Picture 1: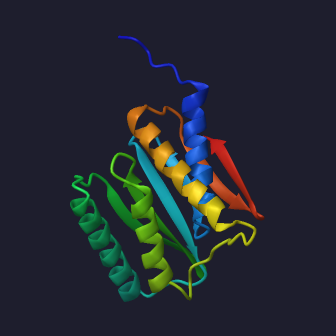
Picture 2: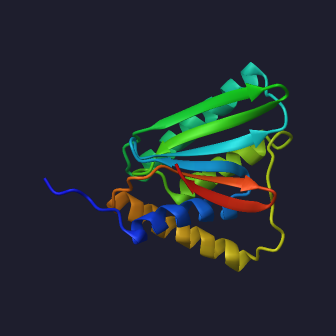
Amino acid sequence: MPKHKLTNEEISDGVNLLISILIRYPEIGTVSFDPQYNQLNLKFMLSAIPSQDEFSNIKNLLIDSIAVYNMLEGLSLKTSEIQLHTHDKVAMLSIVRDVHTISKNEITLIIVLLREKLKDYLIFDYNVSLSEEDLLLQEEVIENMLENIKQNLLLHRLIGIRENGRILVFNK
């Protein structure tokens, strides 16, 4: 059985995807790709801990919205996990999705819902220097890189984080 050799282009696709997601969606604190399960993990930082009822309502809304979106797109939803991790007075909302069914439009849907439901808690790193044209370019890159990753196997775990206004991507 031939071994799959990872090319620079495949590594570049993964890195470009994470960078573009973080540039386009300033609400996302970190994004990671797990090749073992072919999943993206989007993490959102919250400045306060939502109540159990509030989190449960948001979680149900997100799960239902993601399921309906995928049904309308004719896709069979594989992985959709939503968790809340707390520490002291802050929280991190984690959304795990499989790369084979997630799309740029679904990520946008998630962001819109979180902006609406967590507007008082959601921490974001908004870059005022990005024009509408830059944002549209990032959306196009996200779509293209998602398609490339769906077609090509990535073997390395990647993580993209925000740090002091910069975006860093690591091969884990």
